[in-house]
Image (cartoon, rainbow, N blue to C red; front, side):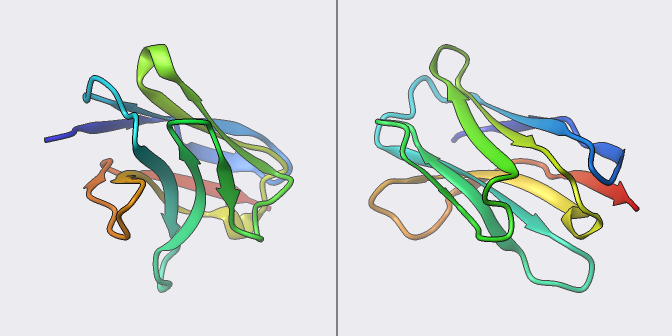
Length: 119
């Protein structure tokens, strides 16, 4: 069982920045991919960004490219989502998740954290 604990979030103004963190209990994530998702009120959950633990390959949703950066700290088993140039449409509950590189299903999820961006 893998536990993902998130931190960060809150209320921010448009144009501002914040960093979300997701710390994992598993000893190593070699062979796994970690990602960030978000769900706005009345909308389906959407993929935001992902990073492969081995090699660090990243991917982003078009809506956040150039504004958000996903990164990891191997020693801390932690993945981060740096969010810059925030927009009101970034308002959502953000959740981290992890899956095996070869899997399609995201197996474990963080508890979710609210990010609200005011205009």
